[in-house]
Every structure is written in C-alpha cells, then in structure tokens.
Amino acid sequence: MKQLIRFLFVFFIAGSLLGCASSAGQSSAGAEEKREEPSETATAESKKEEKELFDEAFLSDFSEAVQARWDAGMNAGKEDRSKEVLLKGVTVELSILEPKDYRNKEFRDAHLHEEAVNYLNALDEQKALLDGIENMETDWTRDTAEHWESIVKKRYVIISELDDNYDLKMDPKYTDRLDIAHNTAYITEYGEEAFNVMLSEFETETGQDDQGKLLLTCRLTNKTPYTFKGLGMSFGICPEEDLNNFAWIERRVVTSWQPGEVITFEAGEDRLKELGFEYGDGKGNKLFFKAN
Image (cartoon, rainbow, N blue to C red):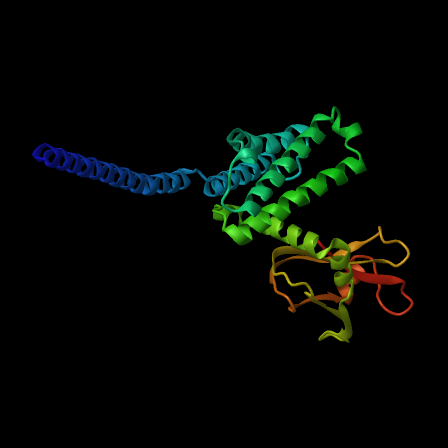
C-alpha cells in the first residue's frame, strides 16, 4: 500500500513538472513571437524611409541644365542659328540630365516625374532633328523650322510650369530668358490663335495733338488669365491689301501686363508720314499689334 501511495505521489509530481515545462515553453515562444512582430514592422518602415526619391535632385539639375543652355546661347550670339550652336545647346542639357537616368528614378511627385520624362523626350527630339541636318541652308526648311519651334514651345511650357509650381533656383541674370519662357508658355496654353484675335480687338481713338495734327490712340486689354512680364509688343501699320508691306510705329517691352490691364500706344501724323503711311477713311491702311 505504501509503495502504491509513493508511486502515485511520484507520478503526480512528474506530471506537474511536465505541465509547467510545457506552459513555460509556450510562454517563451509567445514572447519570442511578440518580440519579432515589432521588429519586422520597424524594418519595413526603415526601408521605406531609406528609399531614395529624386524630386529635389532633378529640380536642381534641371535648373543647372536650362541655365547652361542659356549660357551657351548667350555666348554664341542672338542671331547665330548654326547647327553647331543649336546642337551645343541641346547636348549641354543632355550632358547634365541624361547620366542621372531620371526616366527610371522614383519621384515623390508623380507629375514632376512625368514632366522630367517629357522634357528629356523634347531634348531627344531636338537632337534627332539636328542630326538629320547636313546643310542648314538647304535642309533647314520652313517645315523644319516650324518643327523646331514647336519643340521649343514644349520646353518653355515645362520650364514655366516648374518655375511656377516648384520655385526653380535661377540666377537673376536669366530673368529675361525666364520671362520669354513664361510668356511663350502662357500664349501657347491660351492658344496662339485666340491670343492673336485678342491682339486685334484693340480700341482706336482718333484725335488731335497740341498742334492740331492727327493723333491715334490705341488701347489693348489683356483678356487672358496670365500676367506677362517683359513681353515685347510691336505696334504697326500696313496696307489692308498687302499685309507684308508693313512698318513699325513703335516697339516696346511691356514690363508687366496683368489680366484686365490696358496698355496704350499712340501714333502721330508726323510719325505716320515718316513711315510713308496715311491713316483715315479711304486711305486703305490698317493698324495692328504683334507680340514677340
């Protein structure tokens, strides 16, 4: 009997120890799992933080590339449109942007990445066009020139948008060039045909100056939603039947032309005679404006 009791006691004690060991093992495993879970989350967040984005790098390189191209153009001279000069402008931008492979980089701002790709495509298009030119005098046709200018407008639209929305870091000495980019972009976005129609919708007042001579006062309103800065405006006169036989009465750079603002140009009788024109009923001449 004593042996039976002793046996049962030993069995009970052994079972208790096994149960405790099992429970301890489960508790240890559970604690280990709990320790692993936050570790995996922290690793994922760390990887996300370490992921390199190229928004700022592109904007910095973009500003550098555009200014380098403007530098190349300034050094060559405004009227130099040789293949060598045009190609140098394109290649200097590509030399800064292409090695960074921004097409395949990740950006925080998807739209900025899209514009980066569009700009690189425009540069490639310009380079391909120039590569197909052997002799500028014979190969640079009217169609070629129009194609080139259409790509220039694409570039200016992107430069203008990035400057408006991302505050490009540009040297103040390029203010005039940046104004040209903005003005071209705004006219392109508004629509060139619509913009030219607006230029034709000026009001003309016929009066006399202090000497009793004819004085024409023309008022032109900015009907677009854009503010133009440093916009070249030309005020001219030509025969109604021969628009190519024109003369400029006045050419002016408008420092700032805001939406709804009116700019005024005048033409006196002496100035018209100096140009070989008369103005009035039955004279067959017309006034016009052109932005450049």
